[in-house]
Length: 399
Image (tube, rainbow, N blue to C red; front, side):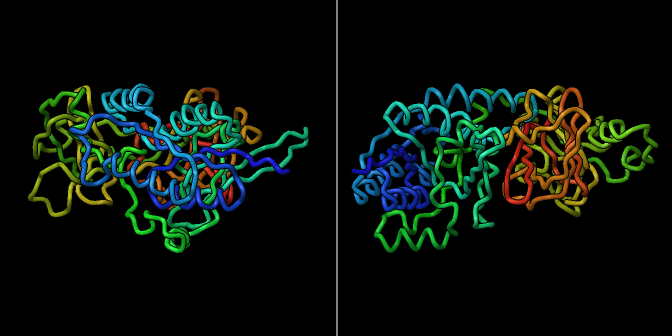
């Protein structure tokens, strides 16, 4: 008699994980559904949007429909320590973290994975739109590949850019070969309650959170000024110097502009530079400009927000970014670069951004990502991920 392989799936109460659980059951796996409770503070959650009680109840109904065991696991202590505290720390430094990438690395594919293994599972599964590939390397060991989802509109490989070979070896992505309409159709055909449920838009397994209130729990309001920087200041006009070598060129193009208050004019006030991020348009509450104002830089030490008019303001754009060795991660360790090596890739600096042509250049203390075209709002604390064809091979935190 064939022994069924045990899989624990993270049932979020959404359609994607519901269909992933259904497909695993159809494929003959012994499936257990677990709902992760990651959040306790209802005061900053927009409860109408994504209350965890409603989601966990939907997950329970799906599990009962599929005839699989179900339970809720409270991971809120781990989530606070590994995600929330990290987010506070990063915003305080004027950086913008990505909680979804961190949640996958620290919670779903670490804490949650360990719980699954303790339950005797061989794999964890999620409703992510991505795929896993595998091949045997020359030494006979299996190497795992993280591949984009077939649905280009929903591909979520970026959110998994920090996974390791060990984590991938224990992971299944049942819906990676499907499009979103196909997933909804499978859910409807099998009378799953989540078939027409809207996608959640909030923090990983939490729902929508009012970010200012969330940050104000720890980061106190601090009044400061908003400065509008004109597009024709001298630092945008300076000519590009000649370089002795490629490292000098990359160092030059990765350098962030530095601003002073007298580079522009004060156009408003704010409640704290640490509440804002590069490229942000909403929340400035400054009117009377021909084009909308965008944040081009935040100075948390001086508590000043620098802005520029319009999406094409030169202060928004940079060609090159840097990742330190400490923040550099290779999913495909066999493709990791040695010092002075380069690699042509496609890269993105945010979810859903179309992939951009770029060249990686390794130096002693880190890695430059040099884009063929200038990128808008390269933001410290966010993740850059790089691909070869449809395979995500590495990533890093932007310095």
